Length: 78
Length: 416
Image 1 (cartoon, rainbow over the protein chains, first blue to last red):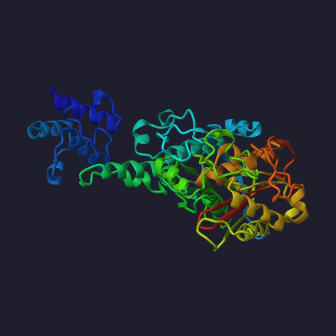
Image 2: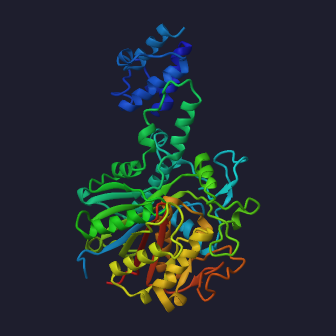
Image 3: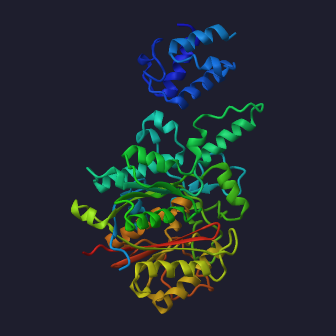
């Protein structure tokens, strides 16, 4: 697993209070990991803080699963 | 009787600087324990007052799901823990959830959350990165919301805000809504968690706090000649109020009846009490009238008595005006001498002290009495330093808040 993927997983475990094993690439924040709309906003903000980037709202809307978050960040974090 | 529906207390919960359950809290009150100690919540080195009455040995994760706890300010943690104790104590089950409400007081709300979020913004480059939970963590009504979600109480639901009178306003509102038929059960009380940098700094600037840093445990000394201000406390108290027939039908344990409440304003000054205790006099008269009792029927007054020079004096004047010669027969005590001042949660934990006094036949003391104040009538019994045994049929609790809000609530031993 890439360093980015590991950090993303750790943030999700911490913020959503889920088990490590539940955080699979296909897992949806809202459908599988129990996040509500505010949790999702908080997750995006944590990614921005951790990786020091800014994720525009229209792109944030497409980040709904663990895998989508990891690939977005792998593509955009320098 | 004005009201056909009577209101009783069927469950209680407390989280205080001298005990984290009702049993521990009452043990501390009866023994005369002080909850004051050096501040641990933040570095208070540069603060004029370096001590407070903090809740001790408390980890929210022992009581709440970690994810849930993270979204709550400490004032809501305290609310949830005491509401749970009170709910379990009441043994409520199979109730009509549409007839169950929550009325919860907090003087300030989520001050820790407000402080941290605003400080992090101020330390940044101006880009707003406020946490999406900032507002719902901080607002003063959110505890009432969380309690309703946890227990499915779908009846009346709101918060009362009247500074240090907040939770007594909540209890009085709960009593009245049950009397008027809007609900059969109401979870009421209040919580506060203001031992923070702005909480301490703000009250310090007002010269409201004791600065007796060399002896925190004797700093809260209501009615003592050398009192120099209140000691900030934190915590919560919860009471399940229930319509009497509803409680009787299910065979509930009853701590006492809430027989009346009074409200008034000083209409005088934002923070200073009326020098002659005008608002305090009126509020006790209003409560006694509402309860339809004679002043001579009261045995115990749990006073507001915060240990400030002006406040204590005006309350004494008011008691003497309202009770006349019967004032000398009363037991009076300020349990803030032990717990410190829990602001919006004060009325809730002090109401619980009244109910326990009624049930145990013991008056909790006003500790830390060293020197008589010659301006205070020496014939009054302030239950100084040690608890006193006494049969209590009726107890009255006063709480007054900045803004000139006064509240007074009266509890009676349960007899059919």
